[in-house]
Length: 209
Ligand code: PRP
Ligand code: URA
Image (cartoon, rainbow, N blue to C red; front, side, top):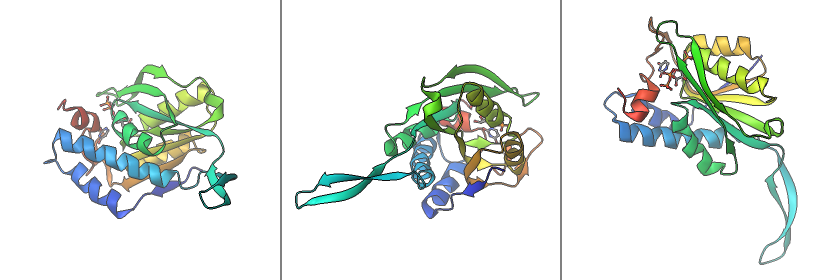
């Protein structure tokens, strides 16, 4: 079964408070999501494999470490996932970025796929699917399914806020996928919004309220 990791770093938790606050305007919201994207990228890459290389420092020959293993691929779920990508790329600039476009039908809450563009060397990459919100889990489940049907074999999911319902749905549908979150909230409301959550992530990022 997929494991759930909560990034409880004080900087992440502090910034998340201002992201949640409804008084935070679009500009600041976008900047904070970008910053938390970087901080979460730092945490999620802790276990990347390293290999030793020989180098010459100005003083003497030395053995030092560089990243090894598969290359990374980031896949934001459009639209709101885009808000976290630049922050992540600041730390892992060599990652390639695919996009999966999904929106939740407001009546059925079912995800509708409208766009997919992924790196060509899918089998050779470890993917991190990114979206600020894991609510019913429908969008994450569909995006990961879409990625798997195109050949991805190593996938992790990262979000800011998750509802217990979404975590369970994702674990059930994709038991091989570990989930990385900044906060696990209480529940979903009758409209499928996370409580207390932060409202509509896409609308707050792009100012389309
Ligand atoms: C939001 C959010 C997730 C999805 C989560 O996107 O960014 O993708 O809802 O909900 P779920 O877990 O119930 O599927 P939305 O559909 O509002 O589209 P947007 O990013 O274009 O605003
Ligand atoms: N999507 C959002 O943007 N916010 C929620 O609370 C749930 C789904």
